Image (cartoon, rainbow, N blue to C red; front, side):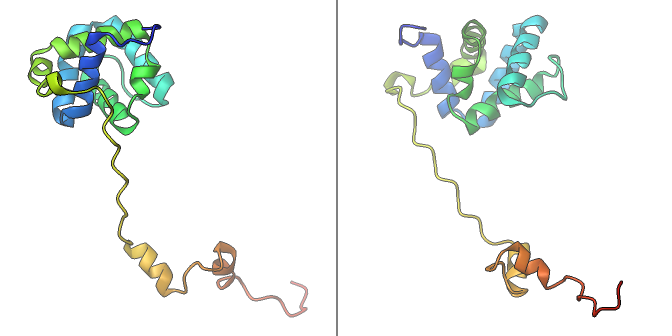
Length: 162
């Protein structure tokens, strides 16, 4: 992998990660992680914890959670796992996912795929929620937080010494 060429199994795995629906990806990963073995799952989970900074609440036998962690992490930051995991561990995981019955089913369109990453969709603009509308109704935040909270401050003492 150091020579710049991508092994076929990783190319197929990347295609699956980019084109398949999340629930199907999770199912394929659960099946692969079942065949992965406990020690390999522990190694994978250890690397995921270091790479992602999460996953400390469950162990390597929580296959459903580990599969979801893998799929969601790669969906949120495409290429993160492919570049960050140990290459031997990644090739082994990719092989098991791609060769699983569900993985073989999810190769539709692979023969015409050019290997490019699809454009990442822009984050949608969320409508204002009731908290933002309430702040606008109260006078807004145009002057910043200090000015906003100054309206609620206790009145200044008038020289009484307390």
